[in-house]
Amino acid sequence: MEDIIQEKISADHLLYVSLKYTKTCDVIINLLIRWGRMIETSIDAILKHAKKKKKISSISSNPIGKIEQVKKLFRKNKDFVKVIDMYEMFRKIRELRKERIGEFRKNVTLKVFYRGKEININLEQLKKYAERLEKFISTTKQFLLR
Image (cartoon, rainbow, N blue to C red; front, top):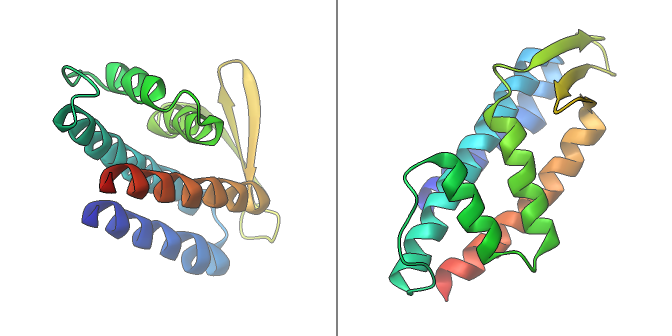
């Protein structure tokens, strides 16, 4: 849980401080990567705990398998599954085709092309992601304390 909190603190700094003053797509990309690491750390902790509690028999060795296992564990929690879906995009953010719009301005936007869709990631969208991640961390914490 400690590692998850550390990643969250670093991500919050990027969102609320770095992005406020620089307004570049590089900061947005770094924030998404940081969130991806935080979610990955959470998934690993959840799966270890689930194995310990005998909710799963083994932990998959590949990332896609881990994602599927976590989705099965939390299939009733739609918000949690949405975050896992976001994580799938965050994992690939470096390789995805991107366009930078309005850098160094208030309306800085990173346009990402993912699964045949155009996703505009701007400050508003980042705030929505941050809210979802707050709920995700809360759910993760509750699960790990059971």
